[in-house]
Image 1 (spheres, chains in turn brown, green):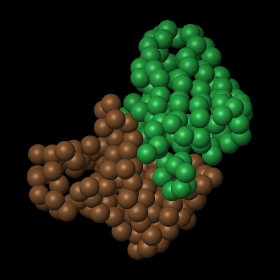
Image 2 (cartoon, rainbow over the protein chains, first blue to last red):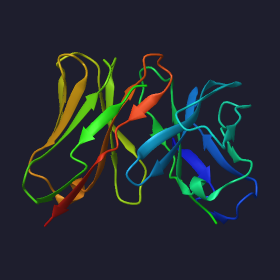
Image 3 (cartoon, chains in turn orange, green):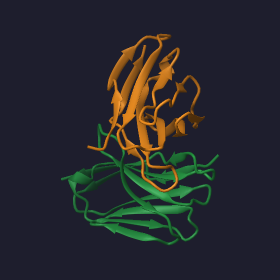
Image 4 (cartoon, helix red, strand yellow):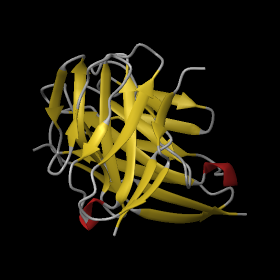
Amino acid sequence: EAQVTQNPRYLITVTGKKLTVTCSQNMNHEYMSWYRQDPGLGLRQIYYSMNVEVTDKGDVPEGYKVSRKEKRNFPLILESPSPNQTSLYFCASSADFNSYEQYFGPGTRLTVT
Amino acid sequence: GQQVMQIPQYQHVQEGEDFTTYCNSSTTLSNIQWYKQRPGGHPVFLIQLVKSGEVKKQKRLTFQFGEAKKNSSLHITATQTTDVGTYFCAGPDSGYSTLTFGKGTMLLVSP
């Protein structure tokens, strides 16, 4: 089954404790992206990757890191989480950016206390 | 930067009533995509419009792309409770690398 998976689905952590949210897709997609969703603000892009070893900042990259060492995986790293990073995070992928729809993962609800 | 605005933010209808959400971009778009997110779920792609003035239908849903390719609409005829969710439009930036989403319209349908 074609899908985007994220882990963990729920996470409660404390300020400053490094964490990684994994994202994996099995569709051989080139384009992958991370979004955060907050009430009243909609979906905002954090980082994206056009292909392996190619990543770039989206609209709200501060406090986040990503890597794309393999085509299928695109982890999101929070080196020192802060309470303002409490949010619902979605990973998405598409065959390429220009013409194809994005497939979203199930989401990761992160709470930073 | 590019801005994509959607109205209304929220609409509550009775089952059987029609519903429309509007999307406006600050820049001309090469294409526009629509997504639906059910409560507690993730966004799911509905459709992509590419041509100026394009109209596409999916059963009770009608999507339009404006002549100037800066606005779009989604119209649902005779809503059903299964239509409940938030509808987002999204358009690519001029560099074709990021997708800007509108803030969405939340639709609630009462039986």
